[in-house]
Length: 289
Image (cartoon, rainbow, N blue to C red; front, side, top):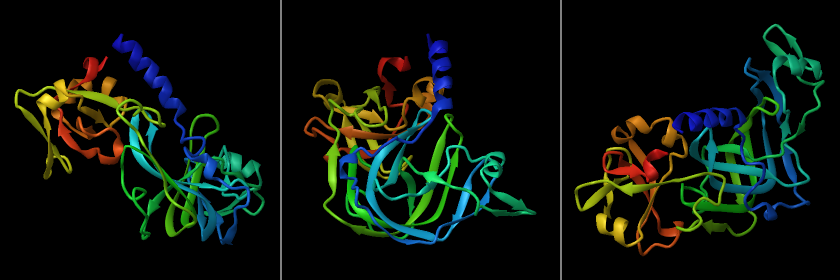
């Protein structure tokens, strides 16, 4: 059974994509604006990553959520442009494809003036360089938050491998909220309703409590009581994703795991504790199968 699951997981790795649309897609507008655009493609790496100089200021939806990539979950700050504004993208961006689309290479330099770029149809993954964001957009949490915003993006780049994989990246260096932050916190009953899968962990310690820390082997920020987990409905979720079930289970008890903990009195992610526990004190639900 385990070999079958590993085989199926290996197939899924070939089909890794960012989310196709914003969780709060209803916030997108047909009347978006681009107030500044100095983006200019200047280079492509052998792996198909196309790089742009300059920056762009445009409207859309800025969203914080957990995303999944090859069985691992990661926290993602993504910007989805409004329906009528564009960020450049190509679903195939290899050097050969770009040359077929009109790009020219002179020595180590590229000329993309002959390339007609498509529109980015998913959210660009942003690194926050210098912008103060409202809560909970500024941190990882169990849920999704979004706001209509005008943002400025630098260091824009993307790659496309047809139906195999794709991604776009940038640095957010300017932010102005255009409305209130919309937030949905996932609960003990629907924590897998987003674009990721969380594993539920079970208590596996002889002690009456398990420490939860701010980082691996870091400062203790709380205690997970044995009675709360076993008898009172406490829920402990591994953030690491489906990959730990099948690829790392043999070394599970030797590693630290990032978690969300919902004590019995906590109904959803708003007051969930975000931290780390050691694998020697917990175990995977159903033994990792």
